[in-house]
Length: 291
Image 1: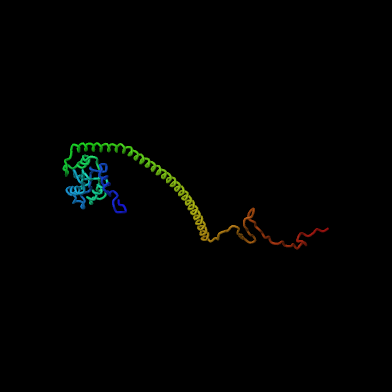
Image 2: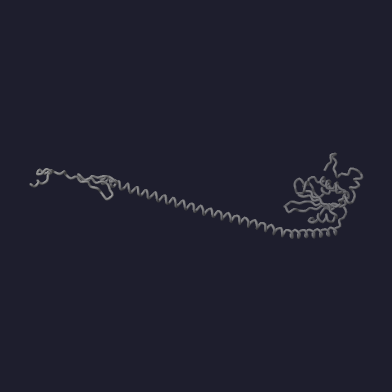
């Protein structure tokens, strides 16, 4: 981080501040550097001798241990660098390390300070039986003790994770079951509603079918009656007789008229010839008796 004057905030500005930076509480003499994915083409030129050269150029070192550890991914590996330096203070040592390894930017360069060199070396040589060692001899008994402490710490962390993960997993499983049951109830309600709707549609279709059937039967009956009347008319025409309509008047003979139906039957009107006068009397009767 820079001020307006262009200087870094953590840089000592004078002799007094520089003296304060070199006090024991501000020093970080033991630290571990992890350079990840060293197999990348842009990093293949960074080897153990190159790493040692850059570390010695950046710090006044007492001891340096460089090891190599393989990744789970095939062909991938990273470097561990355990350093004991005299002039590494907490304000500047991270910046100097990042400047020494510009190829490893961001999370590819991990830096951690340790209280003892043995702890940093124990982390570094965990998987490399032939590390590169420079400087003062390493107290391997202390490294072995630190390694046992690291293994015990990792086991404790793993057991704690298992202990805390089991209830968490049970809670997650319970939530999943509850969500599943809720979904099943929702689907059941939707199925019942769908079944009711289907039943209503079936009843409506049955009613429509019954109405259509009645309409067809009435139509067929009307058609049958019309056909019968047409057949009767054709038969009458073939026999030469006109159809007799209701209320018609028919003359049956001379002097007789037959009408339609009355209240008590047909009415017949007869015409009688006029009376003839007798020549023997004035009124056509017998002659009168003498007095």
